[in-house]
Length: 232
Image (cartoon, rainbow, N blue to C red; front, side):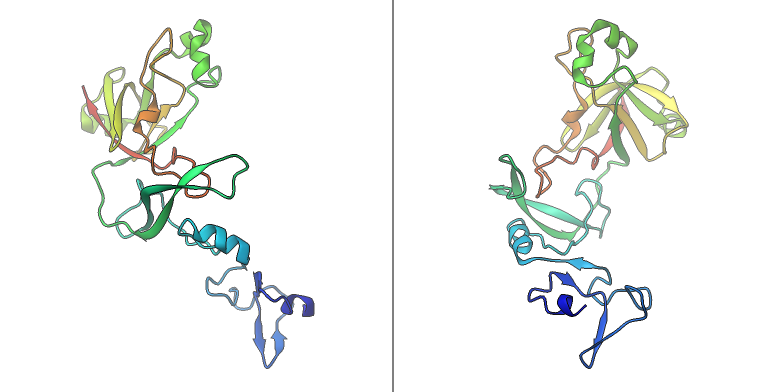
């Protein structure tokens, strides 16, 4: 404990209370079920990490936010500064991303469904699987899973071709009606593509925001998108 308290930079911020120069504890890491830090949690901080994260508008002590396209009104989210690209110091290879600032979401748009993606079947691993006819034949059509009550409300029938759209683009898919998905969510496989030789479908990636990247990894928010659907 003495060695910890002598650390010059307090890189591990103490989850303890100190009174009159003495540590007050009860044989546990915390008192009253909270740590004595600003966040009430263990805070791990270094000057080096703080300097790197400040380049992107962040801090070594996390300030939690929601992805911008799924954040609700008044919820913390991020705004990107698209005026210049920054080279991430956290990646082994060159990764470019943008500086951000955290603020509350001001308004919500009319995109009521969370979009989730995944493999369409156990035999399909990704886009290249559709270049093998036998594998493509197991799942030749891009589909969209919709809860049966939502489909009924929108007048969508099993097997109909529908449009799924976001603020960034739109695609088409075959409607599949189910009760094994949430009413506020739709599922579309990620494996299809417009250049596939047997069945051509514009990929679900057209619905994503290709510019709003994670400020650290440069990753696109593939799981942070909301969409709407309509009949053709």
